Length: 259
Image (cartoon, rainbow, N blue to C red):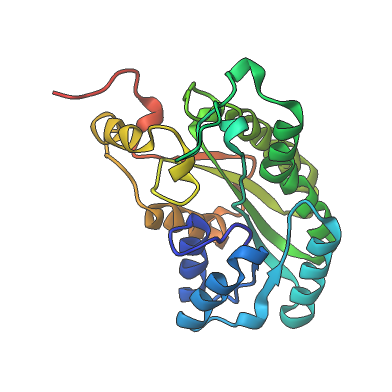
């Protein structure tokens, strides 16, 4: 499970769902989230020895993580890629209490966007490359994306580029791993109030819009976790390269249903 930051993280809800279904769960953390991630594991009866410090930019750290997990657990049956990062220059959004003016979309700095792409999109390819020799037959890889890959959400700005790239990488990985029976899919989730979502300009207004636009209204992280369980189960053995919307139907709407 890559991408757990705190108890609001979608990746955390998926980890809990898998654990409650009888799975052994290994997770990553970064230095500033170590204490919180390990506390969450301990509080929920999970093995803190299966928590590894991994910066997804660093192939060696990813390799060390998979080697250790494989030594403890054997072949890996599932991978969740739930990491994303974009600073205020990529998001074109002013930080709270900051006097710095964010760039216009057309002025997004290349170096900032490249680092954001590295973490948010290319890391899926890097993780799968390192994981390949450790994957079990019929393993499942799942990533998390957002509808801004296909629609314009001004507050998402440069991150939309990363999500579009992520979805393309997912499809090509699905083809690459097909002969091995390994599935690669993506969940395009509606907005959930996570730490990352808090960095999207106007996120609360977007949630309000979705509530009145999506036929089924807003979603929760539990809704996403339930769908993830399907993709990590034998029920989806013949499903790969799929972009699965879990957004209450927001993606099908052209106008708000605010009657």
